[in-house]
Length: 289
Image (cartoon, rainbow, N blue to C red):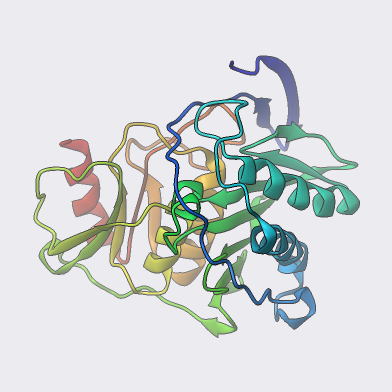
């Protein structure tokens, strides 16, 4: 049942609203979540330490999870979504920040002008089926917009992070996009059913948008296109978007809407590319769908 709660806050004129969404649940087997979390004090960028602590708390929950089935509370939600959300919220509540979570909506903290946008388990269907591509995605938003981001591959332990004006990093190594400018040479990640071939060399449908965007940031993929109309909430892409932009990649909504919208009910269609030239081609291809 949709959660209808009229709760609003303002962070430098950005509205926060509580909503809900539906989706499909697939049943599957338990993955091997053998993890080595990265301690916050090992990070070189101090502003992301809180976000890293959240990701490590989620990793501990995943390592002991036995129930990979649906939560029974709403379509598209797994029991593990709730367990990982609670672990992350415990960390964030201690810090006093406001929270916008896919699973639990908006929660006001004492630090009202700082909001952490979180998807505790992006790619939960992958996780439920043992597909090694799922993540915790976080982005701290302050009065000036996205300030720091952290995306943790919760299968491999690889961590990406970025700070505003401080570049983008993967496990301590600065990352940059591939530089691909020609769609015919591009390997592109997609979300949703594949479209009729728009001219790219190859595509991959991996199932966790936050991680897919990080692959654009580090040059593994040349681009990413959301092929579903308005399927992604801000928690899916905001962390990966800051990481991409700090690496030098281009990310926008396919239809020129603002991506940094802090509304639980809002959905967007992100498109990312290594270069402005490739981004323009991918935008044109997406608009033809």
